[in-house]
Image (cartoon, rainbow, N blue to C red; front, side, top):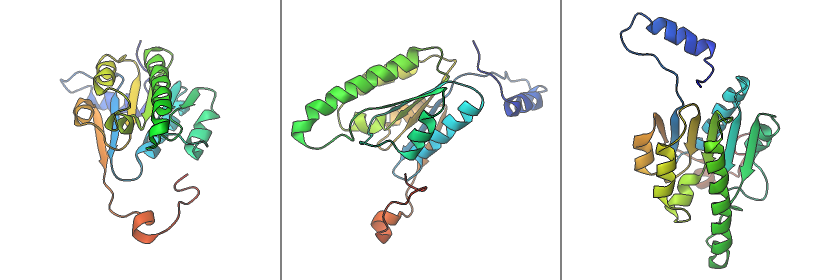
Length: 196
């Protein structure tokens, strides 16, 4: 099964027809890492594009707090998008760490289900890299799943502490770098429509 090709992809393919290299459509591994703002926003923007092409999207958020972000709320209203939230925000409180690990394990089971389900054409794993960095989940388990992923679906990873292994494995990798930020630099509170 191949992905539906948009008009832009068809135009690009037509422009390449005289070329000697093979033009193919395949699911991509896309990574948004770094310490700058915009990683999840970029991933959710890709989800909006996929939904406009009537592709089913699955989103697993590993650091969600008690309320859905506006991005996740908007995506969750679409019939072709399933948004699942896990982690309760994850805590440094040692008494919560076991509960957090249980939430993360449930989140990874849901992520694997989506990765294996052929009806999903894009799966976004938000803040999975943070989970790996802080030892909540084994990197080898996730890396094996990423290498074995279906080739008819896009997988998008967004978050801080992105493992170099995943950046190298990606078909498209972007590292967001913080140049200026209103919270630490200017003591400006998070803004509706910008941050949430």
